[in-house]
Amino acid sequence: MERLQKVMSNCGVASRRASEQMILDGRVRVNGVVIRELGTKVDPDKDIIAVDGKRLELQPKHYYLFNKPKGVITTSSDNQGRVTVMDYFKKEKDRIYAVGRLDQNTEGLLLMTNDGELANILMHPSKMVDKTYEVKVKGHIPGTVLQSLANGIELTDGMTAPADVCYMGFDQHTSLTTVEITIHEGRNRQVRRMFEYFGYQIHSLRRIQYAFLTLSGVKRGGYRKLSREEVLALYEYK
Image (cartoon, rainbow, N blue to C red; front, side):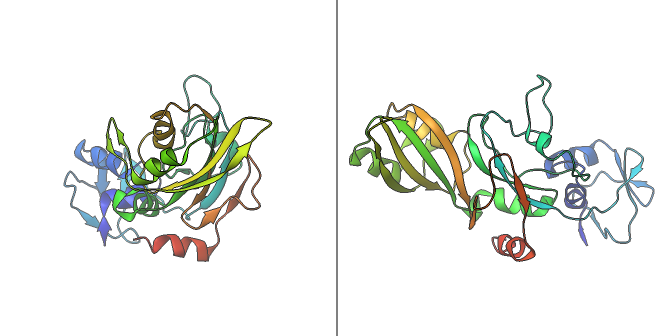
């Protein structure tokens, strides 16, 4: 038996929070009865669940590792006509969505799935899932700044948690410094804001690793399916 909103999320209806609102609005029936209690538990294999009169069908779970290009937004659709991550998954029939976000100008590793349970596990702050970014900025960065980034700095939304910071070198021809930084928080534009705090302008920002997953073998704009072993390993964060 599982909570109704969790089953709805896993079926790709909406996020768990949005599913809860649908229940409160009386849009969900279980075996013909309108359900408004958020704690209601159901058996997805036996109970007939309908949202707005349409019966839910359990979808097979899909898991993809996507190498998001710069300029692509992490939403299912956009009323301004901008390119979204879903434009790269047009041949996939079942609804999927991104686990977390990368801002429009950040490229790199993004997980896509229709497994609401796994998405909620990975995005929960308590799970402390590592995310590694390759950052290129104009100019030199002194060791004192790198140490401050590692220790944590005070942003407008609070102190950042300690991070792993690795200096990768300075390019004399481009005047760019490359740094790899690993964080486990999920604040909006956090890495950008951490460097901007010291007055550095981001030249490029790319997520190169999520948990144990890397971009190896996946070209920009491409994606691959996760193996069963990889999915089970991600569930170990539960």
